[in-house]
Image 1 (spheres, one colour):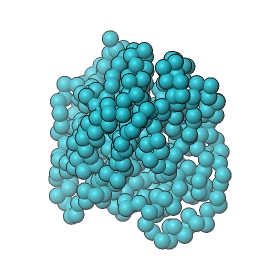
Image 2: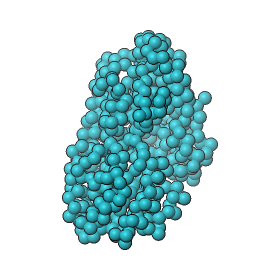
Image 3: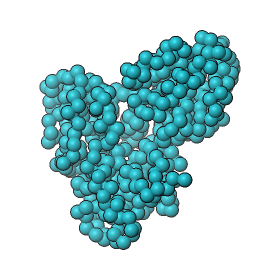
Image 4: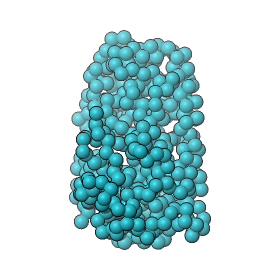
Length: 472
């Protein structure tokens, strides 16, 4: 059984030993300020427009917190992938910074902290969490929130980047309870919480089912290994057998995909639609949705889109990560039984409607934006219980493994996230607006002067590989 290592003892290079006098309890720090909670959300990669599951989570978190009265600022390492004109129309503030200011230097982040006086800084990338600590960006001022989107199993003796980040942060927000329990270990509830993903209420547009169905939907980012593997198995193992029972059955695949993958499956009724602006409206043309994956962790955001579109879901256990096995899903671990579920549902509009109605109730009760927003705000307002590793006394003596932890921390803090290296190398995203801004300043999209500066940047059709920022 894989060993789950709790990070208890990380010695941060350059940090004083013992109690750090700059670390005040959050409630004490908040009492010195006036107004509501202020949070800076750090994000790299594409934001809007995007069909990414992680981006969906990130943008909805910002919207939900804003609706709850939290002062939200997204600090976005801008590479020309996001359309800043779309971002400028959001109700929350977005500040664009050069990747070198995001990962390497501290001056711009310190300027933003002085201007906006954040109570919290939050990131989903463990490398960024390590970097903020190593560079001294977090101290007396903001608390540190690590939003853990996935937590793979660790090999014996391995210290995962996610575990390092969880040890350093004041708050850890996981997307499902199972992963939250793993990161808590013996610590108990308090500093590590589980808050699921959500969709805006406006995205819920359920449909009624009539007659014989024939279209299956599978939604995902097919540059992501687990989704790519699942799509190939659906094409090669499920569709040929399914069409023996439903000869005109089709599998509609939505989401970004490599060109070599989009050539597969035409002979067995597979159609690739690529990225779509409105996911829920697009998949409503289908009759049954599939959430079948064979590896991976985190939260299956695709399930929320399926439920919002009024589609019955056929899934396996890994395919319902973060949502759980519900009575509104048809479940099996065996492909032949999954195919049987598909055949039955395609032939029964009554059963499709029944499952879709139950799924809509689950979406409203457990994953409404109002409930998720309230949970997230409560997490930010309550004083954290337990001191993160970066402020604990006698950290050297707490674990014999602390030299390994120090080495792991330094390696993570000086590395660009692996997922980002991959997408830049493969030129997965085309630039939609401009080159990145000049280093040394942040461009506030709610500031007309800064918008004018962005208008002056030259347009670009594609981002070169050299845009990858490296840490010194």
